[in-house]
Length: 269
Image (tube, rainbow, N blue to C red):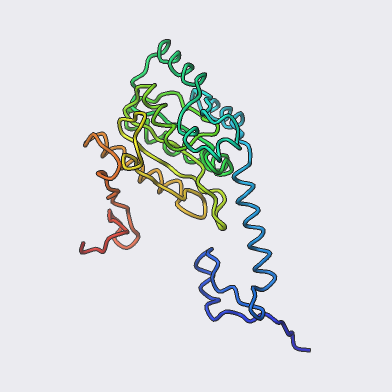
């Protein structure tokens, strides 16, 4: 007997092979097919879980120590996850104990390094646990090759992007990079974001930062993210700035010309 189904397929069905976006879902009468509805509920549950998953900083610190990098564990002024989600401003500053810990570190060991790397759970500690270490392995190779001095890698619980400004200022770092879990989407609960700032200080707004987003296996690769970030950092050192005045014009090697080229621009641009 022929297989009858109440669901009507969408004519754009083939386009679904090109994107994880929810297009061409079909319909059953005036509603979504059951499979599409269940997939949506599952993706929504994944996103919620990513937001509330505790930050496993202990394992990450062990892995960084095994690679020979020192770390500092800090906490934002948001005491718990509930406060963090309702008070974004508290996630942008360190608590008193963490601020004092940084100041004491500088007194004992000095500061003024070229780069301070911060890792914060943000809105998806899942992204941090999956992608921060493999990305850092690539980045730190390039940082070493440049001869830049590196401050201890700081891990911040309940942290938001701007917390890196305070970390960088207290450490006296020339520039900071924060690796942070981005707000989960319904097709990407584990996107890692990178935010770079030259001359970090408390009170800076987003106009002073450069963002590289969607670092994950299904998005921007670790290698390409490292390539773009290194370009921004080299240019920042040369021009002494970051943010809206520093554009990502990295020349990306392409298969077509086997040489440098910006994939965002036509060949004759």
